Image 1: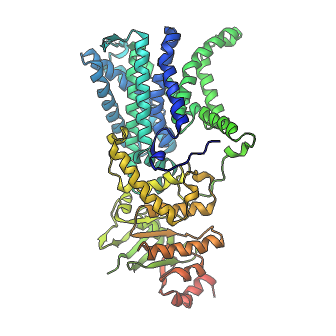
Image 2: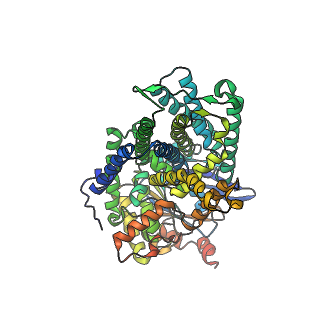
Length: 357
Length: 252
């Protein structure tokens, strides 16, 4: 077991808590950077897609995992990001200028939607965000000047730093760099007063308010920040897909994002990456399994959504902390070996919280 | 002039008057205790002060400023902190994170400086931490800094909640049943701490409490409520011998 001897407050503020962290995360980045040497274009494309999903996952995680607000319509923000980016590129704005504009636009859209919608809570908020997803899809269809409607919108693949986005190695690096940047931004937000205020709202609104957290402002801020991350992912997704059509940003994509954060582990940034890997490879896995299943089952069209739903339910029932939670348990098992107790992670007794404050 | 004054407060939920024309004042540096049987309106009074409930009538003054229309999240900025009867801690966060939230009202950074975690954001974290450590030393919470609230015993949780309120550097502290659920030893400790908060930190305290021996030991003045009305108010000795209070509590 590792004991960290703390002599400075900075040790609690720093991202890396000890040299082990520094070593393993540097190693991970090095391996990721070296991947194009060993993998072919197909797998690089898949991993780029996982990076994009992770960025979108970070966005939804901040909203649902940290602020405790459900969203069933997050594909709308992916759409906002993707269409804005494609529109700007079509009008000759260079890539490096377009990305910041996309982030700002999605942030503002998030704030504009968040301020009215966040007066709702719980189930009603979920329904409202679900509706948001449908409305956004229709806006993408009807607003033809901006989105090309059902005809779709080709995404220009401009040169950036003298490289083309058609080059899958280059695109992989772009996605990786954005994922790392997004991760740092999210960690920074979460270790500052704003991030703590989000967690406070999740755990007890009434106490947060009594400590001076402006509930309306911070909920809207959470929605806006979440929108900004997801919008950025949308811009990258536009490059990945190459041709935008409104039905890409449907309810199924929103549910995929939800599955991502639940499977990955609510309330952990590690979880977004684990979840993205899971969700990214799942369709491939299902495709492979189809071949081995009897054709009466294997060729069913609704197999994928059904399995997604099933997996979501199983995780909520049996591993509510997701893959990250399982990873924590395995880590603790080896740290405490042979004295690990299953009870450590049993849900603790919750002291009565009456509705009378 | 009192530090804190409640003037003719009435709170009605439909036909029920939880508080009926209640007025009192609290002087600076006092420990003022509110007692009363269940449903007397004690917690309602606290919730009106922290602006969770709207008063149907009446005003509340803090440092000669009318706070009956202040936004709930601005109450703590004025220097009023509170604890809750049934703990309202941030359960999935560590003790340290809970206490750091107590410093939220002093936040100076904006979202951009936080995204890039600029030196000013780091400096602010250090400043927060210095104050939090003072409170940790004051309330003996050194052992629990990095423990999740989930894993703490009840007595310590109560203590953390008191600590969180102290982290806001309040002028007035509202304690809602601070000794409920505590063991004898913990209650005795709490008595010392409350006295220390009054004398060392110079904070005025309004407290709701049921444990009468504890109340008599720490309070400077007592207010007895029943059915939303004031039964009696005065020094602990006077309240102890007041016929109306005996009637309300014992039914004699």
